[in-house]
Length: 526
Image 1 (spheres, rainbow, N blue to C red):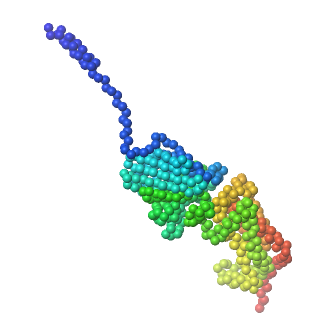
Image 2 (tube, rainbow, N blue to C red; image 1 turned 120 degrees about the vertical axis):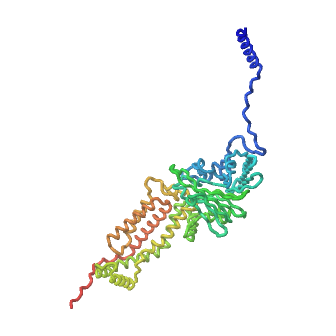
Image 3 (spheres, rainbow, N blue to C red; image 1 turned 180 degrees about the vertical axis):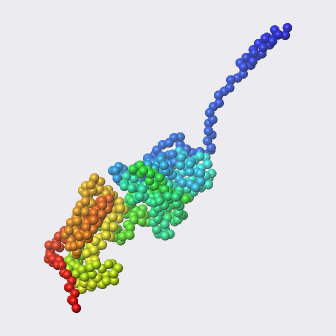
């Protein structure tokens, strides 16, 4: 019967299926794919740091990108008293680190992110970084000297054996980030040999994007007021210099535009690199053109000799920059003593003429400035001055001649590395404002300025004019409150010398005659 046979057939089929499953081989788990390196690849297995120590530097490199993470000058401190690191640490997370490479194609990612192998000489002064992804090959060579601020930097990049043009960067600012407004003092610089001109670009120059220039340059790099990192081409073909603007947090954690620079433009860039203080003698030894980095301003003919005199006085005389400023200021005022005597004589003559000047003014009382008779009034007064041999501007000469010295001292304090960190009594740094809660030097300057005005003969007795002079003194004091302490010390010393001179001259001269109220003669009736 067919129905009973069906269960037997089903059982037989099930048995066959189980047997087939038992005989089938089990699948072997797949092994993870191993990346196949392209031939010629060169890279390190892990990230590491390499340090270089010379008499002047402590430098820390990372083999990731072969860049500098720290570049510390051993002989200098920042404004907080710590070893001065010229690399802006706040910029490392946002901008390429120093000695990153800039390209105009897509090689940048590999060259700046790859793990380089590192080879160094036995003395530790030469470092060779190498990296290759099998197509792009990058070599960076740094040669340090034990007792020099000069470093040889050699970078080479090829793509399938073809040289790739690139630049060496220092981005995100440079110098002492602990001073007041550090970004405002930082510049990308290069010296154009064809125009014999130093070009200085701040971060605003590149606010709309990087700005490049290709010229024959003596040097190119980045600077702040007292330090510089510049590449010297050594007579090579034109150099491409690119100015960058990088948004980086400043000391107060607010985003600030910091300047950056890229120098190079060839497939193989070989430079001498100077990283150090803008010291006049040191710069001239490295390259005479580097002296251009010290900007003496409009009155270089006065500022530079003034620096040399103060420097000599500090080195060979008093041994302190503050006291050197005091002595040189006394000398300047002694040289101007004849002008001060002339000013005193002019002021006393003006006092004697006040009754006659008052009579003339009363004669034209009520005359408006646009009235033609106003010219007659001025003509009579000038005729009186001429007759009595009085120069109405004579009293202004000492102040006017002091202004160039004021500017020259400001420049000396702003650009001379010797002034940076120079202390005097309670002042920690003459190149910076005082750090006390109340700045004593500006306060003393205002007090002595009031005393000087009180002792100096006044040609007139107009109360409104006297109030204006007092107000201007207060404004002047407010301005000086935030200026370098050395500049305030110069002005304070000038006031003290002026007080001493005025006291001596007042004792040695007869008292001025009393001012008599002279009325104009009445008109005769006809």
